[in-house]
Length: 141
Figure 1 (tube, rainbow, N blue to C red):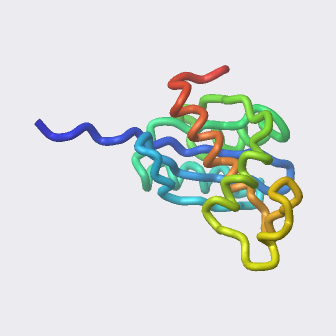
Figure 2: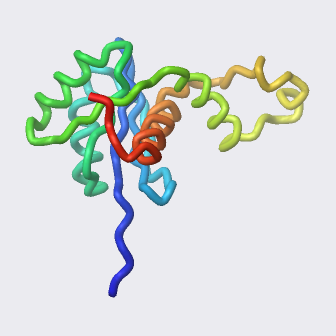
């Protein structure tokens, strides 16, 4: 019997100007990450969905979520979209950024709580949303 293929989800951290998008497997592997202009998020999420044969698009439920849902739906009305709570994802994304991109010599002396990544972390926030969905095994909306 062949081993079961991990589930893949596409997660979107919505925003007014830009969105984070990530493909994450149930095995914990981050397959892809991107930050795109909000106007392009629907096409980007749909393309990632098909590229990674994902089962669902996971959408954070706060800033700009309604517009982003509409853009994804317009790109491909057949896509399944599940909404998850995104409270504290930015802070978790910063922590995840520093775990994956360890700070350099000088930044190491700055206390962890005061470190600010030198680039946007919207893509890492999308990773956090995907992991929440996969861990919970359900959606909120």
